[in-house]
Image (cartoon, rainbow, N blue to C red):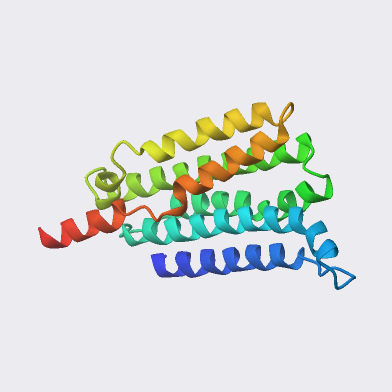
Length: 195
């Protein structure tokens, strides 16, 4: 399979995920600022999840730029990632409906943690197929952000039972850490072309 088909399929699924999330944004019944303010928790949940999905889309694109060959293991690892990302609309909608209760926030963190794990497994599958001396392995290096994120997710999951707002803040912190696109792959590709 060509990597372009994998990328196109993934782009389509990610576009559907975003579409499902935006459909949860219902307009207020009244034309008042108060009615709009009541929708703020829904918007904040949507905004954070939109950023997360955007981060995964951006990084997935760069990941496939560093990929020369795709095999069955990569395809399954990619589907594994898309499965966890497809659950984001569900947990995103549940958070404001429950008024930021601990169980939905815990599940949100579990989905984010398992998405991160799935992304890591996709990276490993690509490295196995494309060689440990390839562009991706060089680009990842020690991957500080990749190692820090699951730790923060685990802390947020643990804190979500006692302090749900702090857990939500920690999820936002991880998004902030990843918000600026990671230049490592682009830089490694440029270095490889220069050699």
